[in-house]
Amino acid sequence: MPKPSAADTADSDAFAAPAGPDGLPTPRRYWSVAAIWLAMTMSVLDGAIANVALPTIARELNASAASSIWIVNAYQLAITVTLLPLAALGDRLGYRRVYMAGLVVFTLGSLGCALSHTLEQLTVARILQGLGAGGIMSINSALIRFTYPKRLLGRGIGLNALVISVSAAIGPTVAAAILARASWEWLFAINVPIGVLAILIASRALPTVGGSSRRFDWVSAILNALTFGFLITGAESLAREGLSGGLWKLGVGLAAGVVLVRRELGRTAPLVPFDLLRIPIFGLSIATSIVSFAAQMMAFVGLPFYFQTVLGKSAVVTGLLMTPWPVAVGIAAPLAGRLADRYRAGALGGIGLTVMAAGLFALSLVRPGASDLDIAWRMALCGLGFGFCQAPNNRAMITAAPMDRSGAAGGALATARLLGQTAGAVTTAVFFHLSGTDATTTALATAAVLALLAAGVSLSRLTLSPRPRPEPLDRDADLAA
Image 1 (cartoon, rainbow, N blue to C red):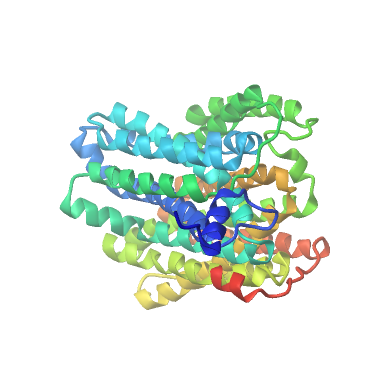
Image 2: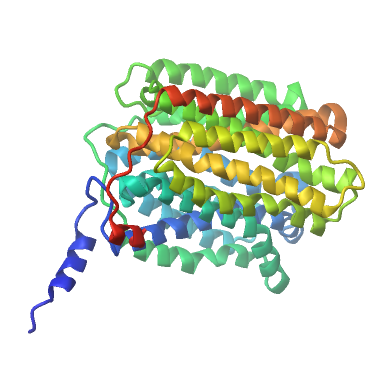
């Protein structure tokens, strides 16, 4: 038999060896990124397409509008309550194992959704999907950290943000295209072959890092689920039904949260990463993320109602007017990611959030009679600012954490995003409850103030973090990135 060539041996070693301290070699880096992007695309798309298809699914399953909401809520809630526990499990068992398990569970959940014939069956399958998506989202940032060399990490995070933004933007279009030619079951069935492909790639290419002898804290995991589950559902019920609907849920969530905090504060590597929150740069980056996502969600929830009920736009035009925001995020995020490898996140985030605040304030001034173009440039300005702040902010969070706490950092990052989005949605619902959809302009002005507040928090990090020092350029590595 002929002996393998040096190139063949090098390629084989590149796939067999665990990740080094500074990323994966090529071509394995390409394949690892492909697996990460495929998984994130599926999990983000599934959240978007279910919203669009909800009326169709409810009608065909003979479900009421109120009960069908659980098709969406079950998925989101399962993700929210599992992010931190699964991130902690990744630190203990290894990130690849948890990510792979998440991919398998998500794919099986998608198959279960496609085979469902009742609302109850679909809701259970959506919970399974959410558990899988929790495994994907909680470990995503840790895998990116170990896939890219440090000097290209900002670029990698920016490209990941681009994938997420594009997935969110095309979600409604993909859902509409599938529903135009097939039944709603195919919205979920399409994930099965994509999931199998992602599993095959991930099993060979993902970095094999993480793992410790620390015991997994099941009690804290249950307390975490009770805390976030009841606080989020309670806040939503409070905004929708008033005190009678949400107060008791908030009480249960707060009580569980108090017990959780008392249990976790003194631990060396807690499930809720209080040890990381004590790092000033990490804590300020988390605060920046929560406030900026709250401002974004206030606009995303309020604007469709304002466009249709106040400005008289059709549903199709409303969808088109919402598109410039995610498109602009997709343009700005990769650029900001590259800059984050050379400049401080505090300055980049401050600039981006100030631009976002200007866009939100400009949107708050839109009145009946405004042209579509006049609205579109304001939406794009918001997206450019938002996209410009996210990649540097995420890079600052990930790199502030010790390497063996990368999973916890990624879980905190994802949890901050969901908390901010929930807070923004609930705040807008309160505005609607008090003043109807006409309150959208007030909500947008409030969101602009929040974005400016987040800009101030971001700029405060300039006194804490040194300017990144670019390492000597490696032309081959740059091309591989």
